[in-house]
Length: 247
Image (tube, rainbow, N blue to C red; front, side, top):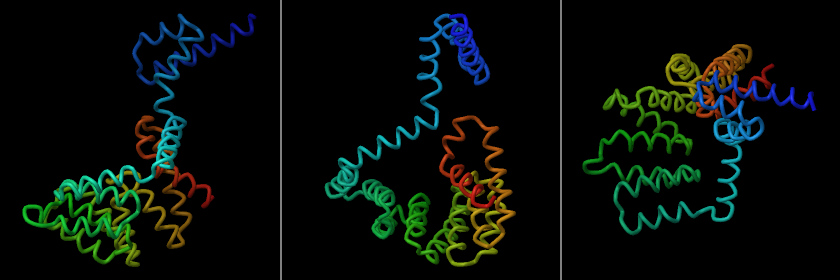
């Protein structure tokens, strides 16, 4: 029993340390230390688990299960709304749903048809159009639309639009130009830009330099809050895979 009590005390202290280190409310210390087992369980399931990788995996699994029972429910709803009222808003929601289903050609047509009247130069619609064109490997038009968007609305999501243009250049085989863009964007446009910079280096045979990029991504992420790592999990996971591949 004394050994069990010591183990339980160590667990409590670990949870208490985590609460202090991560800036949780001080009253958690009283809950954890005052109720050895229940307090630790409450803290874990209320504060730790919802932000954990396991929780994100469980959420993704639940979404996959839901889609497996009715995979087109969301698409049908957006399509019904569009048929009831062909407004630009409904058209754009349907276009976004098409992108999620990788129906890029349909998304392109919906975005194009929305660029009329007062929406002819809408930067958000043009941004969506570039995304759809990239998804459909229509790199030439994607680059042209991205460049026009940068010229007409230079301050609108500037780093993201520049990243889309760089992706289009890569798709067109203009690797040196794309690499120069990625190199700049790696310091300004977040983890996706850093990963794409490293991935293009791999594609160009510069695996040593690419490995440095991926390892730096992972080191920097370790110093960031857990919420940041969760938000960029896709690119950090890809960087982890590339690190193993280039080691």
